[in-house]
Image (cartoon, rainbow over all chains, first blue to last red):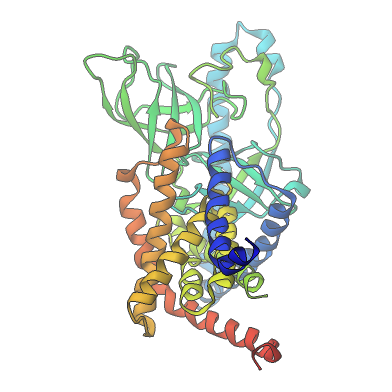
Length: 291
Length: 170
């Protein structure tokens, strides 16, 4: 027996390396991956490398465009662009808050329970949009800065995603375009409810659970409904497109063009406060709830 | 020692890839810099050592792609075996052959991952072939183009590892 084992040890080792991970995968495939301490250490190792490469590339590019080509104009444009993004976000928030106040005037209790949002700015240092894997970007803020799993990540244009995993000084953001991302939304115009689920590609998502009888038309803006206990209400998610109403069935079929182009992300804002108690939400467990 | 070194190199390549893609296209396209090390291992390492190295590279893939644990580890070993079979049947020499095999390995990894996720993932999160087909092809193509550069690093690493323990050979 021992001789047999010795004889085929290489074959056995390869078989074990092939089959044991496969068994582990099938055992855990339906559950979201939790990071072990070893995983966290390894991820923490990659963040400085990403920052280093990013700094080198950015330095070279900025050195060329900032100092050689268009020094003054580039700096002014960058400053104005940053200011413009901040103002856009502020204006959008004001607009949403005004509309929300109109709707919730009679719901004093709810408006009193609405906490102020706090933001933390972060820079994207790595992009992991492998077609077969999760759609992630890495940001340069992590658990040491107070970030935690499931915190919403936004830009002026709308929802980017949510924090998926944190290391000390970096965090992975699961983008709204990922197949595992499902965001509870409302049609901004009619308040009809639906879900936006990613397809794993940057340019298109899927519209789920929109009732066939609801008033949804091409180009409708979809905003977060706030019923998934992750995203605060009123943040743009995307625009409805390719809507198809079948002759039968409960829901209509459609796609969503994301409000945020994930391939152009540079700086993002993490909403570090304002999460609501999921137990207080009326729709918990319903089709309008995210993952 | 070699599997550990390959795991370290895989981490380095994963970080390099994430940082470069942030500047080049921002993720509009992708590539898999961890496929060439699998091909290199299959063509140059022993069965046991290579399989352990491939599993280590696969583990890093699991980590960086955030796929369910074990998926890419198993697929990396399967790709290692597949390339080893091809290497035994066909004489693979030169950069062009290595690039072709790397592209095939990248495609194999992605197709395998998508197929297995379609089997085991919850229905609503299952990947659709139609939505990903073009991206997978572009990923394989770009991986093939980048493979000769990675091969240079891998040869250098092999040189360092060989120089570290000359007594083992003698």
